[in-house]
View 1 (cartoon, one colour):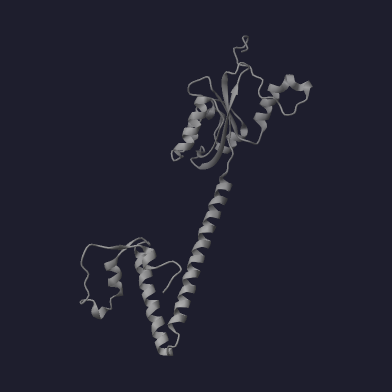
View 2 (spheres, rainbow, N blue to C red):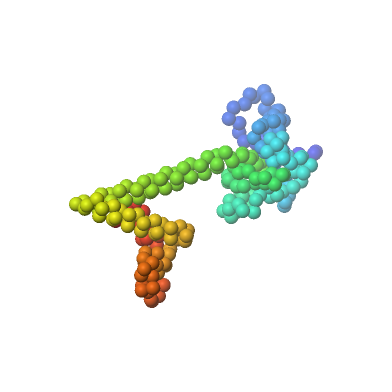
Length: 253
């Protein structure tokens, strides 16, 4: 500790590369680099219970939209969105409590209420005796990357759906071919019409139920001709049918 100023002094990590004649200016250069880097960064005081922000660089202010007087002295928690995963929040708390480095991705607020996906890295800073004195936190807006990942996932789901529908169509054609084997044109046309109508009714019933399980009695009712509506009855306990049973994926037999 620097007894004259009452402030902590520290050397930082061993440099990977540095000119020996500027070692004495190392702290000053580090501060200038922190202030001018394009990476949003804040420094909080680890020696105080609420760990208030003591420094926020311009990149951080630009990212969040806050002014310096709205940042200094506050805990970084005001940036966090309540919907963040409990595991990420727990990791941050554990890192701050244990003085360890933390890396998480979480949703943060900007001053105007908008949000951004933040790749947060929190690193402890110790003095020459090993006492924890600051936390250095860097933020990186990864919104574009998250959107790209979401787009890739949506594209995969779309391709799977297209493949599923193509398989259904091919299976339907195959069933029509088998149906027409040795049949007259009239018999073939009638058989095709009957199958298409049955598939359409099943599809409509499933769509009405948002492709969830449906009652067997409802399926029977949809397949019962109007002329026989009053002559067909169902009894017993309700029986639910899964959508894949009513309309098997990739199969039309």
